[in-house]
Amino acid sequence: MAQHDLFELFCNDPKVQASLSDLLGHLERYQSQLVDSPSVPGISETQYKRELTDLAENRGGNLFFPYISSGLGSGSKVALRNGKVMTDLIGGIGVNFSHAHPEVVRDALLAAMEDSVMQGNLQHNHKSAQLIQRLCELSGLDHAFLSTSGAMAAENGLKIAFQKHAPSTRVLAFSNCFMGRTLGLAQVTDKPLYRVGLPPTISVDYIPFYDASCHKESIARSVKALREHISRFPGQHAVFCMELVQGEGGFYPGHRDFFLALIAEAKAAGMAILVDEIQTFGRLTSMFAFHHFKLSDVVDIVTIGKMAHVCGTLFKAEYKPNPGLISQTFTSSSVAIASSLRLLALLETGGFYGTNGKIAKLHRAFKMGLEALHKKYPKSITGPFGIGSMIAVTVFEGNKDHSLALLHTLFDKGIMAFLTGGSPTRLRFLLPIGGMTPSDIPDIMAILEAAIIETAADKKVRLC
Image 1 (cartoon, rainbow, N blue to C red):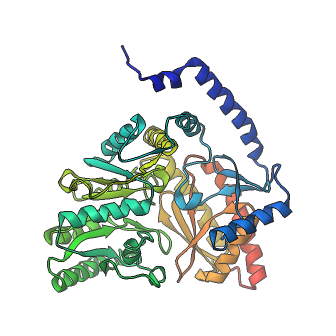
Image 2: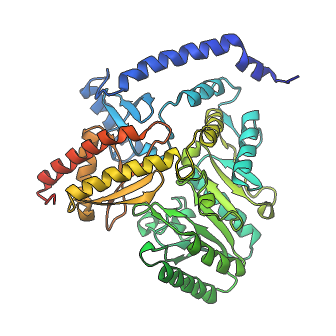
Image 3: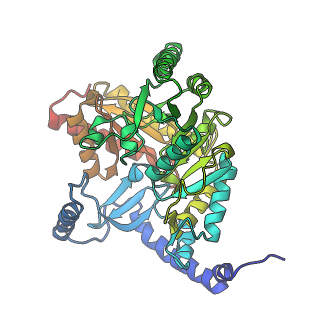
């Protein structure tokens, strides 16, 4: 006979379930107003502009987009406070699986009635324990430690590696990598602008990332650079931090041969291999990028975040840290943990992965649309680049000002994307895989084409 605790009995109470179904039905009726509608009821433009100004002033910086959500969304659609309906193709820079997915909302509603808003390292609830177990099972790694942000997950990963390989203190990373903006991670992130005014904390050496245009030469070049760093600082590197798909600059996938060649050298020199999956988790043709590249046997530590709805550091048993090294008051909110569990189930059973899974189909359809635009306007759009639901395209030959103008024109026409890189600047998309189908893409491409034409005319640049 199945056993249930008191809260589970509450969640399964027929009256509670009926109330949830009724509430979700009401939500669905309001969500239906977002379908094929450029606007819904909202506050006045005067009030909306005032709220935007107040938000910018209170947070101490300008807003990139005039965006304040109303809270109502469905799939790829979200309604702003002023009633404007947006198609969201960036999802908080990769955070969203879908706006208000009904199964995630149902679990989140129940979690909102739990005894505590936040879960912590000292006191876990049942869902937290389940989530940790599922992450271990799905990843094939032995342990998972939850945290409130991708930066904290990465910081914990670095601490685990440093402790295991003490007294080594140096880090290896790829050129143009992004790991975060904390004091430690700003040193690893290969962007000097993010370190202005900050004290040095970690010594980092960089290896060129994979160049698909010269496969063998790229591997040889990076192995040579790695050997030079090891020779210059013998025994001083504790960890090699690897993004398997680089987000900075516009989604550059690596290659298994490339990673294996470097990992062999790093392992021989006594380093941990840390894979940063804060952005890639869930977005390739496998749930984990290190599975996609078939690196399970050689990876020691993996960090996840963003679309997982929680963040965490996963690691092998031999990297289990000493007590007290990693500990956090908050591991995540009860709602986020329950949502993450549901999301993992949806990803695992929803047909998203494999060469003919939903992500691969979305990628192919989006790629075909962008390639068709390139044929029509070869001077204005080139690409696409990327992998899975991570797609980028170069517009107006990578000119930053023109790309930025296009981005805001797209926003005005109801599509949210984002920029990446500096030279060239690219337009990037992180598709909402849980709330989008290939049939949505033709309309998106039509709006993108109209935005390109309008921006080219405004900036007086050639289309073809």
